[in-house]
Image (cartoon, rainbow, N blue to C red; front, side, top):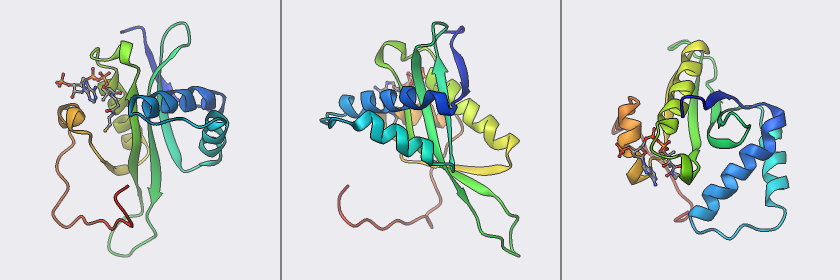
Length: 153
Ligand SMILES: CC(C)(COP(=O)(O)OP(=O)(O)OC[C@H]1O[C@@H](n2cnc3c(N)ncnc32)[C@H](O)[C@@H]1OP(=O)(O)O)[C@@H](O)C(=O)NCCC(=O)NCCS
């Protein structure tokens, strides 16, 4: 897997990003509606506040991705201006798992944060992926972090 490239996704990658998302949805048991690829690709292209890295085989086949929303803080006199990231999906195709691509995608995201002055990444970890995130330096959030949900989704 050393010859797999990890690179920032560009607009031309919209359908690769959407196809990987569709694979993740299917793996989670979702029934994917007709037209999903177009709808997802359009939404991803329109979302300017998002950073996405792709793992790509030498023949161009997409093997994985990590995608995150960039949340920009309003200016404050108490702390420096800046952004943080919320990871909405980390996914590697089943045949490419266990070879370090998930770790490399997270590493690319952390490097991007360092280069862009982003100080925090948040995500919701699936139980099986917790050790991967822990190896990448993720820890439990502080007790002060709370959330509100309209329902069980
Ligand atoms: C999580 C995932 C991206 C890891 O990709 P990968 O290329 O196999 O990652 P690496 O080889 O760098 O690291 C392997 C680690 O992935 C995790 N992992 C392995 N199989 C997994 C699975 N089916 N689902 C979730 N995580 C898994 C484990 O933490 C494993 O580390 P361990 O062997 O020490 O337990 C990949 O398994 C995946 O896409 N799973 C389905 C989607 C998912 O669960 N995404 C994370 C949601 S928070």
